[in-house]
Length: 147
Image 1: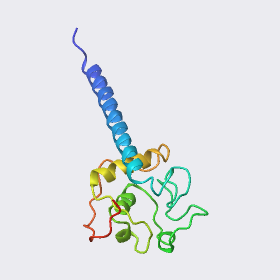
Image 2: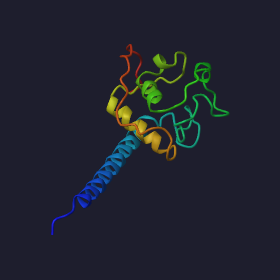
Image 3: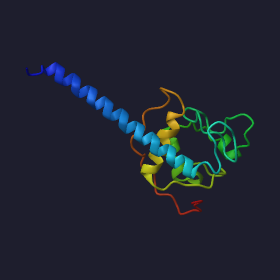
Image 4: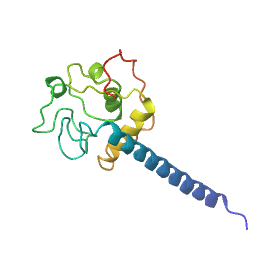
C-alpha cells in the first residue's frame, strides 16, 4: 500500500530533525574535545582559574563575574557574549577588545564554530541563536599564538 503524501512529509521531517540533532551532537562533542585540548590550561567550566569560568558564558556580559580580576578593557567593553562576539574574540582577542589579557587565538573557523557550539550548549536552552557558520571577520594582524 503506497504512503500518502502527508505521511511521507511527516517521515521526512522526522528524519531531518533526527539528522540535525545528530549533527548538533557531533558538533558539541567536537567542541568539547577542542575545549579540553585548548582551553583547560586557563579555564574551567564552573570555577574561575587563570581565566573566568565558561559555563553560562552565552548571554553573559564580558567582565561581569563578581570577584574575577578582569582587565579594565574587558570590563569596559560592553560586549555580551553570543556567537558573533565569541567568534570575533577567538579569532583575535586583542583586535576585538584592545588591552584585554587573553593571549590565545583559534585561527581555524570550523574549530571556532565547534568551540562556540559547545560553549552554547553549556549555557542552557534558548540562550542565543544556533551557531552553524563562522562569522566572516577581517583578517587579523599576526600576533603571538599560544599553541
